Image (cartoon, rainbow, N blue to C red; front, side, top):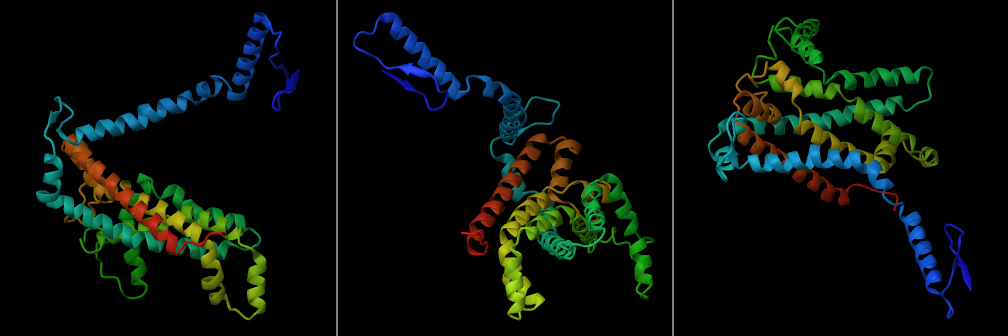
Length: 328
């Protein structure tokens, strides 16, 4: 008797009472050959090898090494000395600048993320039309996201909000120019960083625009026939259908806001001033690690940041059960 395999179409003889040892060996070779064909052999692992090297060599090993260093006193020049929980104890009980950085970062995240997403959704709604040259408009609105993280833009931003900058000139048109240096004031310096973050709304805008393109048009047409206005259609149809995209953008933008570094570094000349008002957490981590050469303490700061981001992400996923609406 014989049978045909479903995958390869090859015929494999079933064992019989009169089978010889050579027949048995042939059947074993056939089974091994078929098993190799089904499993792909070692070729998939060869092609995945660069990814595994990057995963273990550039991600997992550095993370584990930084976790070890967070329990040590390490200055990059001498061998690390184990100090246990001293770095974490110092962080929470004997480091006022740490709490200044936490306050500045939380204000930055809480203010910039909602404003950025609101502006991104508003612009996406305006660009979700079939107009002549609409591609050019979309590219123009996305451009700040390509340039906003650059050092040059941060330098320009510092000039714009200086005492004699363009922002004061703009206020002068309305008779409100007081000559204030918005960058040098501890009450307003952080909010210039917020404005820079909001200006970089291109990435969430593109994601919102892609989501708007997928919404069923017949639902909006039926609502318009029933007399629903534009505002009602937005809050009753568009926003509920778009909540998975909103959730995705919220998670990404919160993570990105917690990691903000370049604007704070450039605008404050690396000091986090004035009076630590722009001392974002990533900037403080950088100063401790590469300016003060306290790499052990900086590693502890990094792991606290990792845990905080993980906590915020977990809370978002748990809360999404109550406001994110999927097709099912």
